[in-house]
Amino acid sequence: MKKTVIMISAVLTIACAVTLLAFAASPKENDSATVATVTEAKELKAVFVDPTQMKTSFDDTSFVDEAAQQEMTYIIGNVPVALTYEKTINRANGMKENVYLDSEGNGYYFGQSGELLESKMSDDNLSKANDAYVGDKAKPATMTQDEALAYAEKAARERFGSRFDLVEFDSVHQDSMDHSYSVYYYQKLGEDKYIQGVLYYANVLQDGSLYTCSMGNYDDLAGFDESLLDGVTEATIRASVEKELKNKYGDVIDYQINEPRLFYDNGNYYVGLGVSATIMDEEIGRAVPVGERLRYDLPAA
Image 1: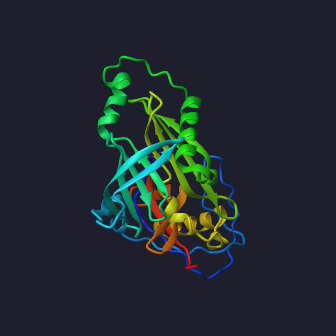
Image 2 (image 1 turned 90 degrees about the vertical axis):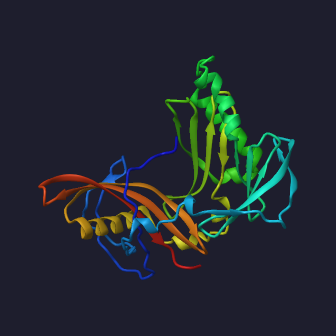
């Protein structure tokens, strides 16, 4: 239900120095482009690294913090929800989240700021919600996309309030198996709003309930100084991508950039994105697809 991109992970680093390049590419509407010369732009210097060094949620750890508030009440849609502390998650990027459960075992994740970052239905409740439409197939799947969007926006307002104003609609997708809808909203950052910032994600089930309702990276980016993205635009990113692809593969026929997003990592910020490309493999004498995961480290504030 999440968006997928086929790629091999890799990492790029931004250099703080500014140089002039020549850029004359005309990106297609599908976000692909052909390697070309470049005009004046800020150079983003890049280096590929071992993809196994990329951090994932599997690197997160958890523990029970005896000093954490053990009981709390959170208001959702004017209804108080009693919550009990379960554990604290040490995320691989250096942030922490306190996890609370309601009386039905549903999870609520609170960031270091004390703000709710995500609510997630328990596995038992997910099974019960899906049985009528997927398991027992007692009811047909009739929810429309517009209805799913309305449920997702209402849930966001009830849980996150004015924080939802940071994001704008990006896309919605329906799962062919359980008929749920995955909804994505992003904050748009940078000089030309090319970089995705805070994410709102919701997975809406056919009965109108939500499996997940999340602004999970809000704490990560709440203190971000947007001036760190000065000079980081679609054009400068494309110039860097083209240069590095050509250096590594030689003849690059075309490429597509996927989801340029801002990330936080232990006191630093970076822009991560995926690239799917078609290159000419001289050894076998034909075009082949390749993928990379790219990372641009931003200078310290």
